[in-house]
Amino acid sequence: MDKSYAVIIPTLNAGKTIRHLAESLLEQTVPPAEIVVVDSSSEDDTVSQVRDLPSVRVLTVARKDFDHGGTRDRALRSCTVPFVVFMTQDAFPCRKDCMKKLLEPFGDPRVAAVCGRQVAYPAASAREKAVRAFRYTDETDVWGKEDMRRRGVKAFLLSDVCAAYRVSAYEAVGGFTHPLMTNEDMLIAADFLEAGYLLCYQGKAEFFHSHDYTLRQEYDRNRKIGEFLAKYGNRFENGSISGEGLRMVKTVTLQLLRQGRIPEVFAFWANCGARILGNRAGFKAGSKEKN
Image (tube, one colour):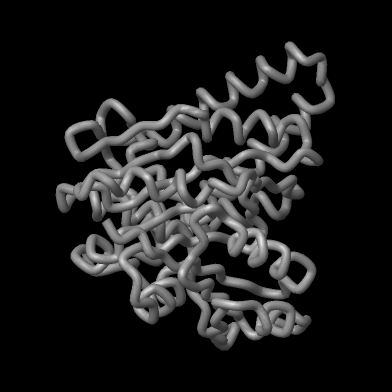
């Protein structure tokens, strides 16, 4: 099987990190055929940091024209390889065999996409480490439409922080919905399952990625998610998003208590409150717009 692949990385003012990330990808045991940096008209030296690297191609988009679905779709369709890996500028492979592990499940021709495991950076807060560990375990699973009830909302687990796509399957379902400002990965996961493909979570392909968001940042982020769910939530009726959220709160709280991190518990609860308020505000706004 031809496992040639490209890595696509949307960027915005990533000058401090993008070269290190690109170099780490080129040093993988299975390196990419090319790295496509899709830059939203950065104001720093993002583009100049990578332009001299081998196998790196830069696509520039006007910042006002960026959207998570459409911009990624344009970048993918500019590639000529059978597989594409999407990453974000703030993710980083934990080991040199991450891409090899991420591509392994494509040995099954029914697998349309593979999601890697996200591990919190060492400097992340205890609550962020606990949240990542809850959401992204070290176990590997493969599932199809018939498994949606078993997995719940995790049936749609596909994060473009570190996810590989079979290009033929992507094209068969029509690609990312666009314009779309968030959760393009979750939506195409539903498309893949409805079309009869399999999805895979590869717990052995580990990538550093974490955020210690402020309450305002968490609110704004989840407001966008709420708007998304108001429009597309019917696509995920077999998965209880609220139920999974409650399990996360319980699991993370107990873990922090066992560690004796009482201040982190209160910070985590405040963070969850910002998520809930943002989600509800976004859902309300999205529902009005839909009607």
